[in-house]
Length: 279
Image (tube, rainbow, N blue to C red; front, side, top):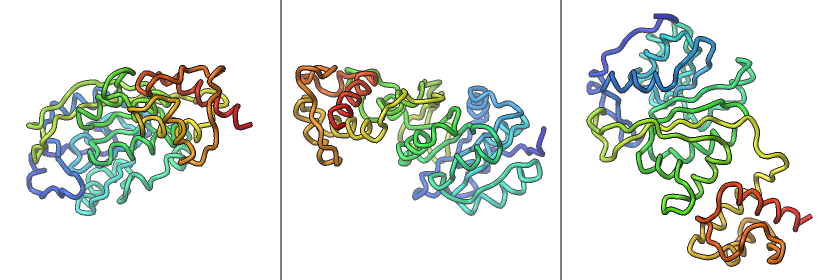
């Protein structure tokens, strides 16, 4: 094994009591760990940021590729063992919150975009995704274990109940895909929900000239009142600090639609229309 990786016994996750406050569920199934890493397809020249490596079930397999690993673990009980096992092989262990780790700094330091992998706390799925989107220019892709229902929302097409803010923002920043589902029996303790492996390939650039702040405001305002038509829900843009109204004659999107009927491209056109109205 390259970079000094050491295999760990996945069963010893039971020896350390998981912290409910951190949303910890330790992966116990080595076959699933291998399947996740096969999905990632790590290469020797990759810089991979792993969120919440815990007992190292996925880490040890990632390390076999010889990639540069940055392990971000908020639980101080885990960091000593992670340093002992993976530090000699060149892995960097960061004890802290992934939301505080600057991907831009890692991109600059290593000279290439990072890849993000992790069995993440499910209650932090949206904040972690929005952090990745906020630094999309420094992240090439992500492979995340998330709650199955949340994964369905991320990849949801327009016109269905699951379609919402997360669906639109993900489609703007990248291409999502549900790779496979994971049974609760693969974890200690068993979660009450099923899990999915979600991959997102991030775009190199957003649509040229798009006002991202206004785009976010439009998406939030309309889905915040999703039972209303655009004609009515866009009035709430004022709550976002935007004093703009669509031109009913020239608006590129019919104003009698509800937000779930709009594609990401429709939201882009609507944003540009409102931007032109404010200038």
